[in-house]
Length: 258
Image 1 (cartoon, helix red, strand yellow):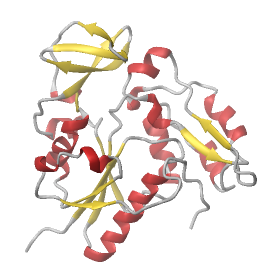
Image 2: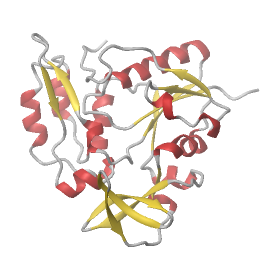
Image 3: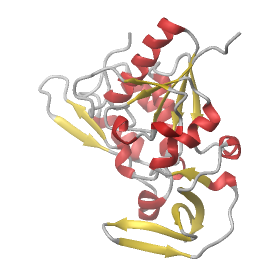
Image 4: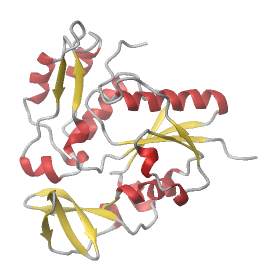
């Protein structure tokens, strides 16, 4: 008897209210499960370090005025270089943000937001998504999980989580050289050091192969931009499915609960 389908979608934490394109991936996965059965896996790439990933664009519920928010991070070094699962949230951020959001989100989500208890960006996003009911019946696999990293295959392009100036940063490794990208052509060179698989996370072009070595999915829900760079030859056994179309895809999903 063949194994049941494993329907996977991947995404970085993408706002403390999730972007609508993530909501569309979830809907697509649920629709596909109704058609073919199996389980849904959310590959949460919380090892990414880009602070822009968690910017959250809200719309006023009456006049549609935009409000762009993001986390306030513990310090500048964490904001720029620490992986999302190690970016600590400033102590007063949640209380201040809870006062701003009521005109912009469904009333049900205001107490849900205020009740989240998480010290870092990735945990906060994941708990908020759960409180919104988006992850019911979904198994979450996190790229920061040491067990996942130990089980993953070796890849030629990768990052290493390593200590730097009292913080943990995500350093790119190329030709044995470790560096942090400052922006443009500027890099900070770091001394080479030994590391273990528990410190490794994939680069964009190796993420699919690395993820698949652990998840072993049969179907993958691809986002609109993601479909342009996925190296499908690294996992030809997967059936690729484009996520459902959704309007205002880069804005936050804040609709009323079903």
